[in-house]
Length: 113
Length: 113
Image (cartoon, rainbow over all chains, first blue to last red; front, side, top):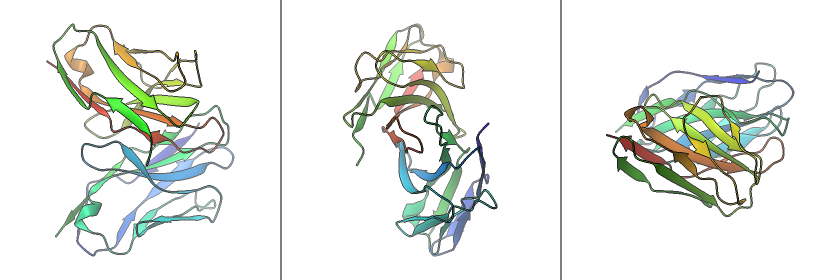
């Protein structure tokens, strides 16, 4: 079956530090990969996505590259801000239209001024 | 910005009461989902639908029920609320095709006292 594993949090960083949140997946075929962000008290918002191998998704300074050889989709940002404090979810959408989105367990990021 | 709405945002209700959590989307999406999110952040799929008159149970067993009489509406009902039902409930929708992203509502935080 499909699964997503992401690093456990919380991840605590100082403002302007470099961020990496690891995500690896198991899936048959070639899924699309996503990062969602959840701010306190809110639902999930799509942050970025990649639909095929070697694609790089980017948004708001965040980036992630679809690595088929390592089945990974690590999230990175060069300089985090306090406003980036949130929970980040890695997810995959399989090529079979009947299958559901599969989410990782979420990683809480706390950025201190 | 996603056009998917959940009401109420917050609900505190007594044990034994019947409640319905509303979810509506204006994007014409065929797929809709209900997730339960525990305090540890992990998302658990409890119900989903491929379209009108289609409802399926998700990975996590739930005492709630759903209906899909109209494409845009996917309400979740608890016939008799219990404290164990206290949680955050997230509704989402997506297109029917493969590799599709999901759009989320802002969630309903339910507290049963």
